[in-house]
Length: 282
Image (tube, rainbow, N blue to C red; front, side, top):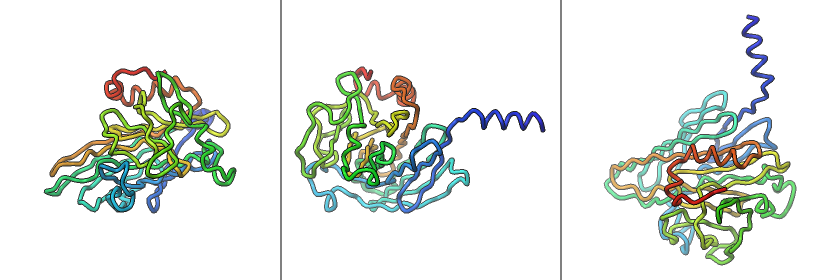
């Protein structure tokens, strides 16, 4: 008993932050005593069609889907969800929480005899509370942009970046198409002229002590949105009849150490280096 007590005490004294999850009515919440408040993710906001950059969002782009909770661990460490798209595609989601990251493992399957129209999907991460620029702090819905970043020109680029686009069907916002993705097949917000150096997008906490970042594989785009949000939107690519696709993603909530974050990202997504042509990201 004494040994057990010592082990438990050591665990408590280590101060390792612990993240946990809840999901209700298409909203995933990430909880942690070390966070400034729950981080909410519109999960999932939408599954989307191709030819989306210049077309009507509601009338054309959104495929339509329903999501239900399959199971949830009592300690908040794991959630399973199931999506059914209106074209018949099914997507199973296994979401797990650890001390400083959320892991997403998805299995998309087309059981129909027709090719799916779903090209990509949007996990919309709301970062207003995390950055200290939520609606309770400021009326400026874009104050968080100055705390946000991605990677261009071989280094971290704070937003708004150089060559910030301002014209599109819907404004404001900013989209960066992933390598190999048709520029007609992304969000109908202003589209940056360049492809990012890697697939990571993130921001700084209000006190500057933490970093949020997210990445997915395969991914369609990086996106700075209009709901105090940042996206790495995953790619489906239009599943053929009977086709199954594995998709994975990460949300990092880590100490403010950019090099350590980049190292973890490279290990978690080794295929991204080839995808981006071996571009530098530091």
